[in-house]
Length: 121
Image (tube, rainbow, N blue to C red; front, side, top):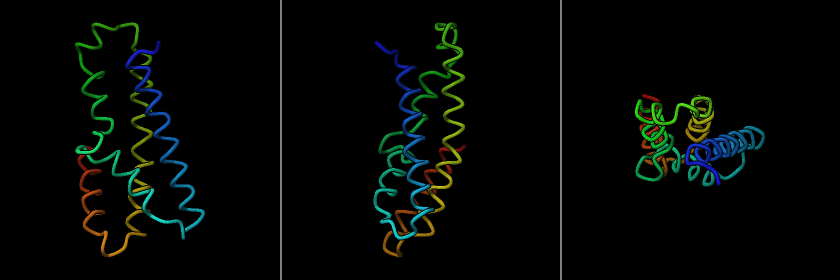
């Protein structure tokens, strides 16, 4: 059985791969539809949808958790690294989304950008 922290690491790893793969596909084929990218990014950056990695920060990056689980320090560092890696992937995704978005979806994109800015703070 895997721990919640191990699950978080696995989830972040898979999410990073998903974002990176989708960004690469859009870079290679500018004619790809934007909808799957919209849904992926929105699910990650909008706290009303999934909450992104801020949930992991609240759960695992506290002094209390560190004190109660000193043996998991390496895993905590790994999760921090995965979060750090996710930021540039998301930045690329949001940038590509902004380049491809239609006027009708501009308000959605503006919200996406605002959520991403908050996530980075």
